[in-house]
Image (cartoon, rainbow, N blue to C red; front, side, top):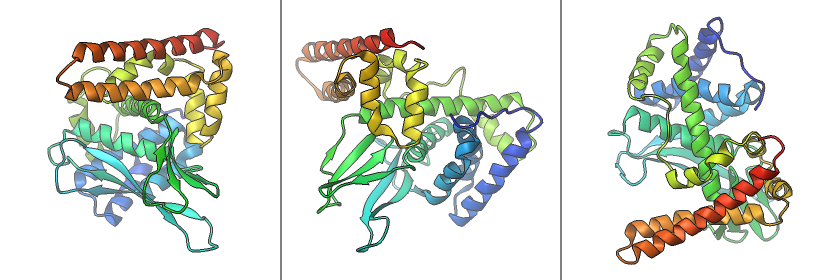
Length: 317
């Protein structure tokens, strides 16, 4: 991604201080409590290191424009989410459509530092990967992009989602992997001597709550299916780049071109979506559990076959 950054003992403090003063400013402007501010001390430099200096302005713009909203009511089902409202500009104004965005933290008081970090990174990562070419529209519908996927609205009713594209589960799998990458970058700060005390205190608390390499609990089964794909040296860099730059409409054609079979990408994304739906139904099911598990296994095998097809035809893997 971007320009690769060489971090070493000589430049780490200068780098961190730059983003710490940026974080102090936005935290003061938004009245963020200290623990949010301290979590951002770790997150913001890690995002810049992950995506490269080429994207620095875009990333800082994302953290500046998209505020963290803390919900006093706790919600155990959902710790955080990326909230967006699609709006239409007054007649004749450009852009024709825009979004109002926030990251909402629900289960905030009782969340562990690791969970809070994972959630804030996960949601901001969706946001960073939706900054360029966020909205596309024609005379019939408006598409609002989250990474790979689109929420679709009728031009005459932009308050209600009409449809969603079928690649939301793949979007979540990639986003979960990148969240793990960013947490690994944060963990790598332990190699350096950092002079900022507040940074060190937060980092110390985090270091002691993660033992060994970090793995997110999100989308566990789907991530397991796509493990080989997430490690593929052609797939991940290409898809990360297209997604960050908002060129996602080319992905299906590119993927099918490698498998040599038209429709293979759409079939894979649909299977991942169905496995997630079936898994949710299975959790609630009282009857026919074995039958339902077999159905899930069947779809998992089919998805893994498509991934193997891709893998076999990749020159660089």
